[in-house]
Length: 204
Image 1: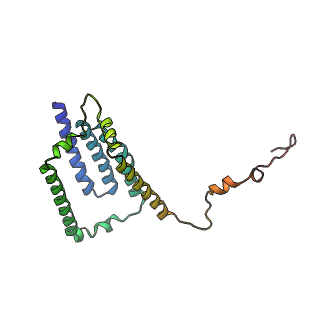
Image 2: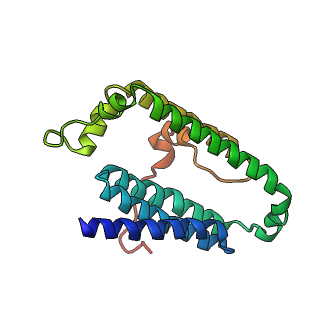
Image 3: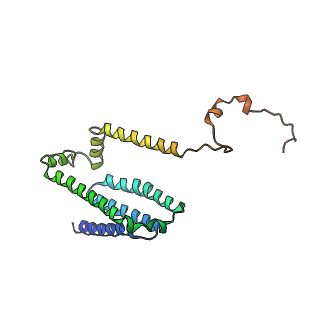
């Protein structure tokens, strides 16, 4: 029990420090690296709570895809970050107002959850007995039974977003060679295959 407590405080301290460095680091590449460190610490806390599936998702999805994508975008784009930070004080009141609104909304949601009479039953319903199913199995049963339609709807939304991104970034330029799958499949054997008889000793 002492080891778990020590690990919790170590993970929490590094997580808070990494979160502060994400928004305070002057170099954007360092900010992304601190973000990756924060994701690893959050995954460690999830393991301590018994949510190994959430820890795996944090490492695979957020660290392996999202954070690396952020890092590549920051390193490849020539962005003048000094110019972006020049209007920080000008927009600080507006940002503080938005942050205050978000905090009020979170407080309202948390208060409604705490004061709701059916909150304990809703929180305890998805949890099966520990000797019957693992955390990942219970999450899969809940996701693909009660929320299967919402899961499919989220997949459709992501598919539409992917198609929209492809359509918005697609540019047709003249003089650029590109693959035409239809023309490749429609060609005949006589157009692409030539049989030649090479005499002995007449090759290259």
